Length: 72
Image 1 (tube, rainbow, N blue to C red):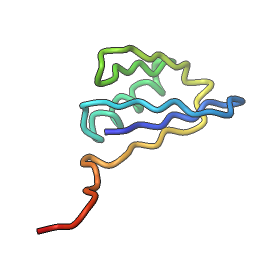
Image 2 (image 1 turned 90 degrees about the vertical axis):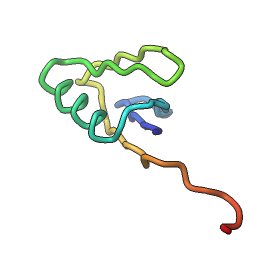
Image 3 (image 1 turned 30 degrees about the vertical axis):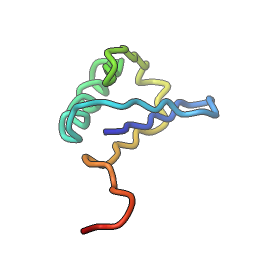
Image 4 (image 1 turned 135 degrees about the vertical axis):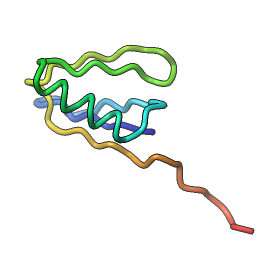
């Protein structure tokens, strides 16, 4: 699943690929809003920590990738 994180006063967004479900990510975001930092680990094991005060938005992508090509 792809997560796009917009940071205030930064023109580029962070894009994180994760194996978590959208419900798991939403729960992590809700918990982070209480605690002060959003702490994510991507599919490759890299850790991303973002202070909640600088978050602009979080876009949680689709669970499954869209298929390209012709269906059988």
